Image (cartoon, rainbow, N blue to C red; front, side):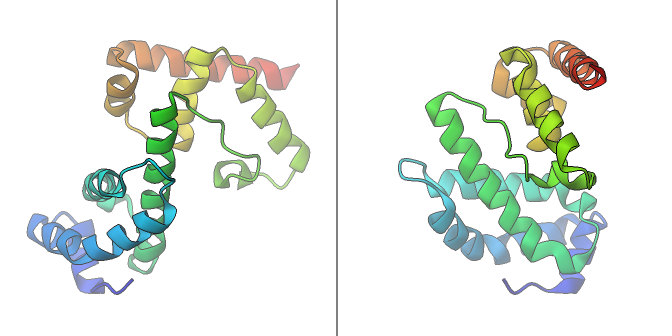
Length: 169
């Protein structure tokens, strides 16, 4: 994906005009990616729209300009998977080799963490996965689960406590 590093940096620093121009420029590539990543039955254009919104909201969190193409690809791919899961009415646990589990070099701990999350009651597991793996904001989770922000925060907190208890045992 071709991108102008100066425009990416300007958007990353909060230049709204640069962000809008960048999104317009990368839209065709996002559409191409969505058509290859979205499962049958998932509207690729919906994935593109959601991805554009996420890119716009989170461009300031981008660490390096060089990471922009891979970052946008992962956003589109994640949105395709999220839309597919929501179409099926499920929130799936990430695989044990998910990048979030890669912060430790101990494979046993990765498997324990995955098992701990899997053992959570559904309402806590959903909140943890959406927040810590899908990187949704509290507001986005509240909208997705039809809950208040306070309820989402409570579920995340309690779910994390249960994971810690599981890992201590």
